[in-house]
Length: 262
Ligand SMILES: Cc1cc2nc3c(=O)[nH]c(=O)nc-3n(C[C@H](O)[C@H](O)[C@H](O)COP(=O)(O)OP(=O)(O)OC[C@H]3O[C@@H](n4cnc5c(N)ncnc54)[C@H](O)[C@@H]3O)c2cc1C
Image (cartoon, rainbow, N blue to C red):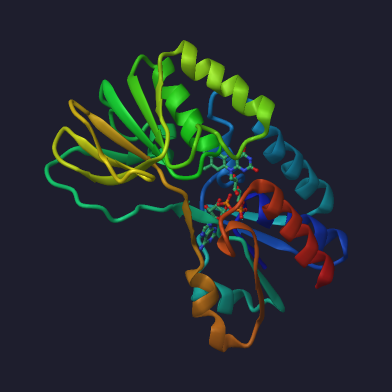
């Protein structure tokens, strides 16, 4: 029983089925792909969707039974009575606690990509990870005509990306007029200001006349299911972002590795 139809669960189900197990994949949403469905929506990242297309084809060829729109809980596992449960329930955006006074609109990167909520004209993007998400969201909103400040906690936007990817995005941000603020820590917000702090000097940096604050502050695992199964005595493995939020590469690799060892 594979729970979660993102990259980790899809790969795990394929490998388990190829090895002769009766593999069934359960996905809460109506579409397979997990976060890869969002990743492909960032500017210039459409090819990321190929990951889903390829894994879908692999699932088909391996003859995996798939249940979409099927959110699995403890009762569902008991009803299925599997020999092994692979938990690939992924992650959701991490929302840090910080002082907030007033009703500034605050959204996360996933809400922006899903078109949830109207994003105001003046936007501050907080980026803790310096990966594809902060830089991509800043570019996406600037393409939509928003005035964007990208506040990164490290030395540069996209610091963790390969050189050529990062430089390409840096060029786009520059052309679109996105202002990058390095070494910034999120300190707080009020109804129309965002309070930052320089991580080295501790000096305050205040951005006024802000309409929307966008949080790209990493992910937190969705792993409640494994705790709820602890007393059932079923062999259980947690893989991909559900074990620790990282990248699709680790998710696919862990799906392959765990299913190859069952
Ligand atoms: C905007 C964005 C851009 C990204 N860009 C990149 C990139 O360029 N390169 C890269 O390598 N990684 C990227 N990532 C990260 C990558 O997409 C994730 O690391 C990867 O998708 C994790 O795979 P997963 O299968 O572990 O979890 P997820 O992709 O989170 O999938 C988990 C699935 O489990 C389902 N689920 C949850 N609970 C249940 C339940 N109880 N029952 C049934 N189903 C359930 C969810 O609906 C979801 O479909 C990006 C992520 C985002 C959000």
